[in-house]
Amino acid sequence: MALDSVEKLFIDELKDLYSAENQITKTLPKLAKSSSSPDLRKAFEHHLKETEGHVQRLDQVFEILGTSGKGKTCEGMKGVLSEGAEMMKEAPEGALRDLAMISAAQRVEHYEMAAYGTVRSYAERLGQTRIAKLLEETLEEEKAADKKLTEVSEKFNIQAKHAA
Image 1 (cartoon, one colour):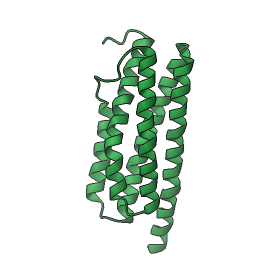
Image 2: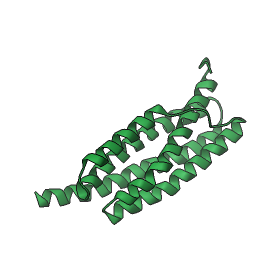
Image 3: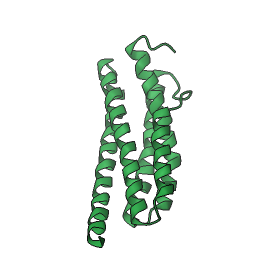
Image 4: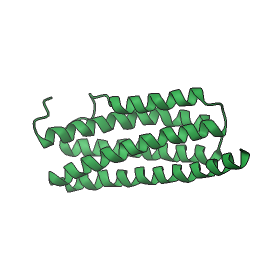
C-alpha cells in the first residue's frame, strides 16, 4: 500500500502496533517465568493482561475503520524483543537478569508510547475521536507500566548498591 495520505499512514501504523502488541503477548509470559523477583513477575503478568486488552482495543479500532489489523510485521518491535532476549541469555539468573529484563521491557514501553502517541494524534487530526480515546487509554496504560518497571528497577539498584 502506498502511503500517500494521512489515512493510509494511520492504518499502516495501527497495523504495525497490532503486530507489536501480538509479539509482546508472546514474550511477556517468558519474562514473568524468568523473573526471580515476585514484584517483577507480578508486573509482567499484570502487563500481559493489559496487553491482551490493547490487542482487543486495536480490534475495536479496526472494526470502526472497517479493516483488519493483520498483514504486517512490526520489524522494530521484533528487533527490540530480540535484543532483550539476547540480554537475558547473557545475564546470570537472579537480580542482574531481572535488571536486564526491566531494561529491555522499558525499551518496549518507550517504543509503544511513541507509537501510540503518534497514532492518537493522527486519529484526532482525522476527526476519529472514539478511536483517539481508545488509543489514549492504551497510551496511559503503557506509561503506567513504564513507571511500575522504574519502581521495581529502583529496588534492584538499591540492592545492588548494598551488595557491592
